[in-house]
Length: 443
Image (cartoon, rainbow, N blue to C red; front, side, top):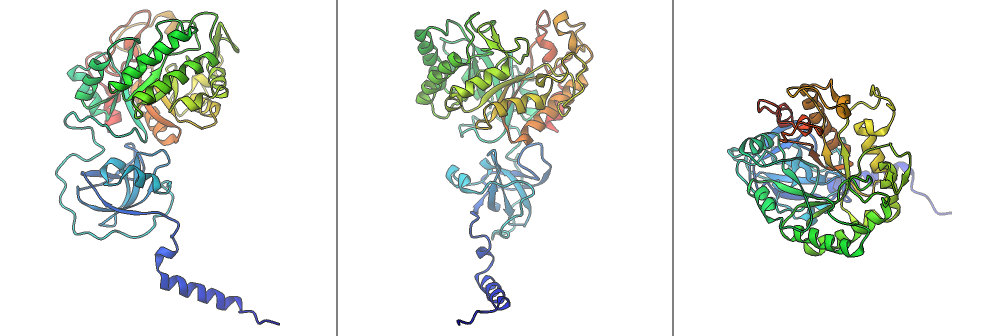
C-alpha cells in the first residue's frame, strides 16, 4: 500500500510555497496596472462625484489601479502615499483597453497589493479632475460611467455658471429632424458641455420612406458631433405618434434604422431610445395608446436592445422624496410611475437589465414664486422650491449609486414659460435667479 502524506504536512508545504512565492501568488487572477495621474484629481470614497472626497492627488502621483466601477467611468486603487480610493478614469494614464481589463470592484471589496513606488508627490495647484471645468473643454472621450446635466432653453452666462457650479457636464436640446444641427452642437461644446439632441417626430413614421429620411437626419446630427441622440419622444401617446397607429414594434423598426445610420456616421454617439410618457391611463397597449411599461416590454420583445445604448426614461410627476416607495397621496398611489424607484425598476426589468437607463427628463414641479398651477398640474401645488432642490439632488445621488442609470438630464434648467404648460415651475433656476438645486448638487 502506498504511504499517504499526512494532511498537516501538506498544509505546511502549501504555506511555505505561498510564503516563497509572495503575495502575487494569492492574487494571480487579479489584474492591476501601475500608472500615474495625468491631472490633479480628487480621490473619493466611492465611484461618483457624490462620494466623499478623501484627498486631492497631484498630477504625476504614482497609482496602482486594481479595479473599475461596475458601470464604468471610475477606477479604484492605491496611491504612492498608501491612500486608497476611487478616481475618475480620465485622470489616470490608462488606455480604455487597460481599464476594461481591470476587475469589476465595489466599495466593500478588499484592495489587492500595496502602494506603488514613487517619490513624494508634488503639491496640487490646479483644479482636480472631477471638478467642473474652469474653462470650456470639449470631452471627446467615449461616454462611460454615470453623468448628469440639464435640459436648457439657452446657454446664457447665468445658466452656464449655475450648471458648472452644479457639476453638470451635459446639456439637452429638443430639435426637429431635417435641419443643420451644427450651431447648437458647437455652442454646447464651446461652453464645455456634451450635448444630447432629442430629435422629435415631424412626419409619418408609418411610411418607410420617412423612416429612412429620419434616419438620415439623425445620422447628420451624429456626423456633426452630437454626443447622444434620443430617437423620438414619447412614442406611446398620440400627441407624438399618429393616432390609431401606436405600435412598440413599429417604433422599434424606426429605432433600428436610426441606430444603424447613427453608428455608421459616428460610432461614439450614444443612442437612446425615445422615452415613453409614464402613464397607466390606457390599461393596456393598442393603437390608441400604450401604457409605458407595456410599451417598453414589447420593444424589448421586438429586439430593441440591439438598437440602443441606453433606455430612455422620463420621471416628472413626483410629489414625494425619490427614496420613498409608497405614500403618494393621489389616487392609484401604488402605481410605479408615482415613484423614482418604481420607474427605475420597472424599466430595467422590462429589458432584463441588458441596457442601462438614461433619464432624458427628470424633474419636480414647484409653483413657488409663480402663483397657482393650472388645473391639470394641481397635484404639485404643495411642493416648495426647497423640496424641489432636495429631491433633484437626492434623485441624482440615487441614480449614480443604482448601478442601473447612465445619464440623468434634469427637466429643466432655465425655462421661463408659465402657462397651461408650467415649464418654468420645473426649472431649477428659480424666480430671482438663484438655483438651490445647483447649490446642493455642487456641494
